[in-house]
Image 1: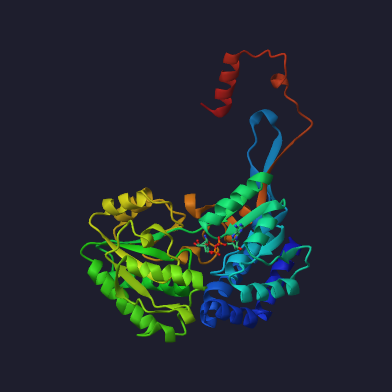
Image 2 (image 1 turned 45 degrees about the vertical axis):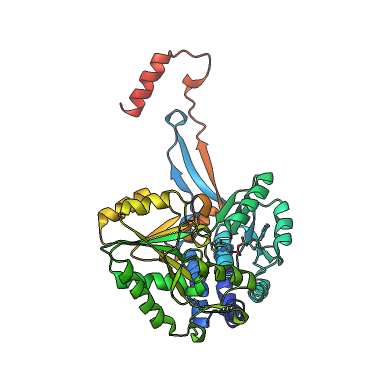
Length: 439
Ligand code: NAD
């Protein structure tokens, strides 16, 4: 435990020493301002480390469990053990947080780690490689850089745990590769996260919160609201409030805002620009290929069959659709793959209960977006097509641990009745069980 604690403290120290370099790399790769870089990447990793240092002793401690009566006197417990060597594959959108937070969990649980940063954020990958080299013995944590070919080569090796954050498409490949060695996986994937705005919701507040979560990092956030379902009657007011918030946040020309990001590369830029044709652009729409800039854009009159409603958007384009009754919105979600997150804006507890009971998702927020994944208090993960397993805080410790069940029996007593030849009849056994179970 002391070794793990020391590694976490070294990591916290190294992050501070490398902060300037990493923030500059994030700016170069994704146009992330130092403020954004700190708030959405560094700050979260530091929180994760501090939380782990505070709780490590309790997580590591064996937990007592009951044992069956016929082995009495005996003691049972669960002890958490490291899985071994973990492979962590990261995406490009939060290239520090989504690689280093799982690393914290892996270290807390006592594993050795191979990290594979995304090749699409190359400056950050370089800066992370330096950070890790400066901080850890390479027998303990090491970085392997490269693209899909390198990831595929790594996946052919036998690891004891694979932790993957990225697209659903590649998630399937990772799981297939893991099956060969029966390696356990955690898959943190994507999806289309819906935001439902009910007729009774405080519309301006909902618009402001949704605009914040959607357009940070230029919409390239796995838990960003992908589309909005607004109830008829408030849809127009919601769209008006959304435009107002976007003007307040990023001004008339978002390309001049220090708080607004850029699209990661030409391929994603071209893909996103295509979506602008899938609806009526009621806000934004401006774009500039040479700077990989797409303005915060709101679409209305979008068909459910159009590409923008079929694929994960993962960029600054927000379709706002309309529904009549809550049941209609729920029916529409039921037909779709399970998203990573679900957002609901309402003050009505009955509507909240119905939505949480009826619409599945990895995580959910009521009257908020994104924040369920901030901090180490709540487990973070997907379900169905948005992934499996979870991390952050205790859930992260468990994701990289084996829960080993141990039973220790005393030697001074050995009740004879379980051994053959059996003298007790079946009826006698049932009566004895009922007596011992108290009914
Ligand atoms: P991606 O799946 O393209 O890449 C992720 C990682 O997989 C990279 O390290 C990449 O090198 C590697 N990779 C690429 N092709 C591979 C292959 N054929 N075999 C093995 N590995 C391969 O994802 P991305 O574009 O970096 O990230 C965007 C996606 O990630 C979005 O779908 C987003 O929703 C999702 N995401 C999910 C979370 C989450 O926490 N659930 C967080 C961020 C992003």
